[in-house]
Amino acid sequence: GGGEGIMDCLFCKIARKEIPSALVYEDDLMVAFRDINPVAPVHILIVPKEHVESLADLGEQHRELAGHLLLKAREIAEREGISESGYRLVSNCRKDGGQEIYHLHFHLIGGKRLGKFA
Ligand code: 5GP
Ligand code: ZN
Image (cartoon, rainbow, N blue to C red):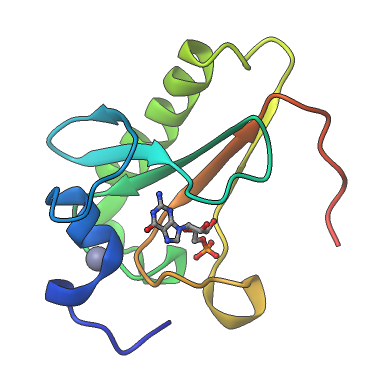
């Protein structure tokens, strides 16, 4: 990860439909699509269309976008039928967080009992 411009960023390409994905939701601000390597029955990536590298790169100008992503994650969880039993919303941030794709995203994970953090 890192060192990539907007033109060759994988998630920017997916958001622009230049690379196919199993899209579950789209609006002006974001896309949500299924992770190619799911760790649970439901594993969806919540991704802003704007290229922000990570949580650490969010600024005051992203306040509305950040709230939008969070509320849509909740909505998608309901639609996926995992809201009652519960789920996890995670954003891996930079090196120690294990981030691999340097375009901000939240993992919406559920459909099974998840283990605790490392
Ligand atoms: P990170 O490790 O950056 O938090 O998460 C990146 C996620 O993107 C991983 O869970 C990985 O499986 C997923 N991923 C990587 N490449 C692709 C792709 O081309 N398509 C989709 N749908 N997911 C991808
Ligand atoms: Zn990007």
